[in-house]
Image (cartoon, rainbow, N blue to C red):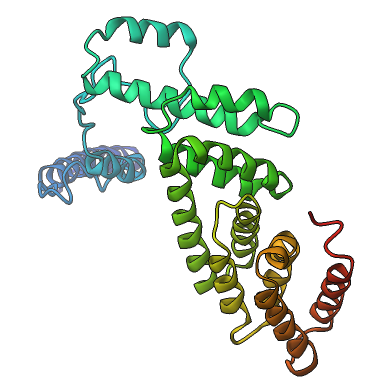
Length: 309
């Protein structure tokens, strides 16, 4: 018996049903692959939390790695007490300063000593910064009322820094140091010791501005009879040995500042120093500007240092 013929419509219907079944099977297979890939995710510390299927997960991966690398914040214990005075000259409002002073009753405690040290430093810096020719008589008694035995290092550091910043006030600073030295010779000795060390360091490093500032201060201290003339001649001899443009310029500035006093105290030695300058002018290979400075110094000598008392 012959099998019944299938119509065109019935064949197409069965094919569409087969296609729907096939599509459904493919969808289920894709779901299984995705779940398998997530199950096979790398659980190592390097690949933990990384999804390779979704693009947004790949974009978030560097952020996750950065978050994992950042260490947690550590809690730093408060080592200083609440009444500790901040070092380095930090500003404290007056109300808080009075409150801190009221809290400290033991004068032998480190907090009280630190507070008194900072107050002494602030006071000395204030006196040195505001001294000038018109108020030096009023500044000196106020400065001597401070504890300069304890703060002699603060005083020398402050006055050296002020003199290097404003060399035009060097005679005022030298006069102030000379008066303080009459009452406290240890202060003048410490200042001179630090000035000599600073000059030697600057000369060794070819630091011309530091050499000029230091020698100018030493010269004015020589005028105040705080420094012996032997030290002044030793400085000149050191500057004239293996003379260069910078060393001769520093020596000329030194002679301008204290040449009148050296001529009065030791005229023969001063004449020998001028002879060295004359030979340097004619024989040494120095710059034309320095030669002109030497000629100007000889003109000042002829006028007996009238403009450089």
